[in-house]
Length: 253
Image (cartoon, rainbow, N blue to C red; front, side, top):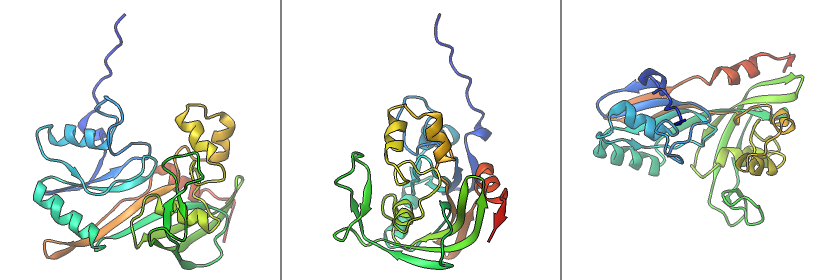
């Protein structure tokens, strides 16, 4: 028998729209969705869904890209001129980027700056993995504690994080570097074999139990910058599972 063709996803369920005008489309990207296509399925990537939403013959430029497992504010330029102008803002570090992260353990300091250069991890079995190394690129991440809490699974901290530079996997590497990896992070957590198990389709129930989250607990909460002679801010709340985890606690500090 022929393979059934899946029913199309209604436009309103492709993603949550935070803002839209003639030049910009701002989306709350769900965790688990890649930004660029890896399959032929037109629903399998954010940019493919954007083209379904806008029309396949319309321009669509992803200005910022989030990891597959990171949720949050993602900006799409709907014309070439807007894409060039906004990318220039990114290149000149004129965009304020704020994230929320749930990490393992209680972070001692109320706030801090992680200033640690990043480059390729040449000893890892994972080709895409980077690490802190003295000859790496300048990388800076600010953090402040929103809440320390405990659950049956252990101690955790909810952090508000700002990127001062924009290196690959920067937040994930920096938080792991100070001893507080992000919950659910398969690559920069306690065992990079978690990542290999994922890509090799051999994640077990024990792996999932140790990870706690199906996706890493990292959410791009806010983007703000000056645009067309005015200050703009786009923000969205984290997914329910993220908020529920931080709110359903046995004790709090």
